[in-house]
Image 1 (tube, each protein chain N blue to C red):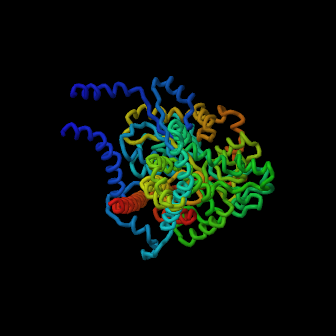
Image 2: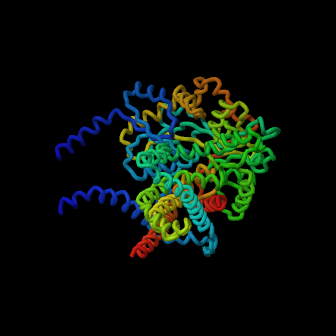
Image 3: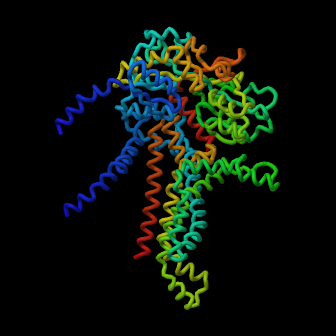
Length: 336
Length: 288
């Protein structure tokens, strides 16, 4: 028994040297990118996927998950750094960091880019079926003061933060508001709108393509997939503003294969590699020079190229406990 | 004797690890303080239970009575209750029919009852949504024969949730009822008729008391999972109304209040246990 234990303990590192364990969203990591990395570095890559940031954090908290790479969103990244759950790997000093677009260098969630590299970014706004929605649809009024033929055919994302952020923009109230009066107005707006909402569902692509919804909150990548199947779908950058998000590559504390993890982080910041991410996941990456390697139809897609007059995406940190409590209260009342 | 105990070990171990331990953790978490980004701080707090009934003013900390969560609890009980009743109305004749078939046919009918349950619950629930919604086959068919002008709103409402619950849990009603009816000695019914009971009287005085255990078992098997159901309200309700299961799920995700979620789970378990206890006590008394 003891001999077996010793054998296992000594054998483990030798076996593990050539591995990289990635924990990320499903259908997010291009197989050709993985194959290229495996060939170049002689490392075997293993991928596990999660369905929400909460799942990922819970697994990391439980400890011993054994992952080398995680791909957290911007607000989650900030939390992981604050809670000391990620390795400081000095991404800014890596050779390929020179490729990172200036606007993704000083970001609120990792101001010096000590912990994370950009993976992909996108936006959360809404999409319309232009066969039904006519005229000017550049305002959130399409969702909150809908025309008669849109009423009852609106889908909102099933995410309280995204829905409430959108309502706040329509009312001109700041994000993460801690004012009960402001949040009361948000609730009133959403309660009025609920009459016209068909569903609060995150399967936006399917709802738009099937015609169940003619206006739906959506992520830009999902709207593009919807347009592939139904050309009359258009993604809208509302003039009141919209949410931007970025997923980042980071290394959880105690990663068993730290060197391989660092190699991966540097690897994905090369333009031709970052382009593979965009080609596969259909979201923009944050790497200069990657455009040359992105499929032409994709590079020109309106979903990843906001028009010149569109406002800049707003990146939103995790709200304070007070603001979260109000958001929770609004959502609970809305669903009652 | 020793061997007997050893034989019990696997099942006791399973119960300990997968039932007692999780319940203990849930109960413990419900009296701790929520951490800012999910998880708990190891500081005792009754806040989660206070919050169930009272709303704490964020400025002056005064408590006011709040019915939001009671309404959600009430809705869950109501939905589960209606689903149980519907399952009974559909399940009793079905079980009766199967139990009174010739012996060779019974297993075929029973198998047919279980066929839909070979498919995963999530898949079945989504399939039901696709059938019910505006562009689904029901609305298409009704519109093509000209019975309706616009689509009927069948999906994304309480009707759809109820239908989902009934279709999810119907076999749990049929099977115990079938077992009870199967054992029923039909000569008792003949005896009742001989003693000049009419059909109504015979049913209520003879059949129903004998079916009681099956009715109770079926009722509990539908009602209990019905209260805590998550998928039907989530998918068929279009996320427009919360039931207890969704409220609990929400606390562990966006709301990041694990103690409150744990407290809701504990209360759900307590309500279930109390209901079971009452039913068991009454059944025991009537048997005596």
